[in-house]
Image (tube, rainbow, N blue to C red; front, side, top):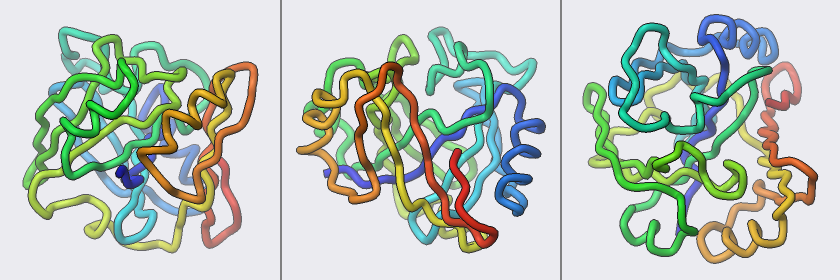
Length: 204
């Protein structure tokens, strides 16, 4: 089974996106770092002891990979918004075998004492218009969530709006059970991450 690990909120420019998210939440984001293999960088926020969200963007001037970047960031345009949910697994290879085609191939990543494997689609695009979760396997015990200051923000709902709602539900059902995740019929794929923050509810 998969467990929700973190939410990726994409933005065209990290500094601008951070200002937008901080204004919406009334809280400051934490420094993240660079992903040299993908040419991206991020800011982080705790969603509790085992979950977090990252604001992520292409890093200007950073070389990218020889294939499209993760989270379909090469094609990201428009408002800062939640675009991807990432689920952890103790066995990435087994999870990939049970997942739909196109979830990706394993890449190895490391930053500081964080080390992980993650499936990255060859075309950068996750199945179901990006609504199927990205898969991650953390190595060791180091994880970002418990190191972030807990400012009281929690994910209360993740709404997946899909023109393939029935098929997406069927693909997710054997892999993850999380009452916060719901699938809704819609004409175009989109995601809503609903956060309970000290100042009230925020939808990204």
